[in-house]
Length: 129
Image (cartoon, rainbow, N blue to C red):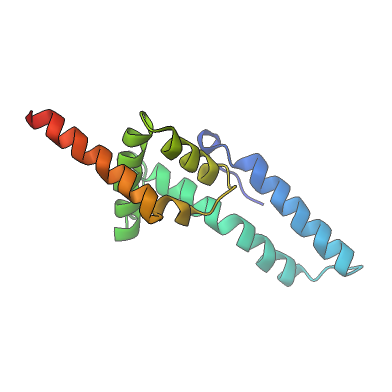
């Protein structure tokens, strides 16, 4: 139903989820209702699209509106990536979210945010020290 930037590795997963949505509609109704199908498949697409498009907007050369949510998300993800370089738990959580195994909210769980902030603090102290 849509194309994703392949760098995020979500296209095949979303395509599989779209196929499962279609299969469910075909099981339920001999002739699926197109409006209901499109509404259900939009639920599959919306979140990974937001992740992918928001990530692309971290690059200045990409055109598009940078809402407060996008700016905050990109700033946080940059810090999370920096922390994940030395924290395998953060790497695991990020990869599970990027792979659509866990919801994006997993990146904002208190323990995850604390790990990101600890790394940020270590970096600041290291630069001053």
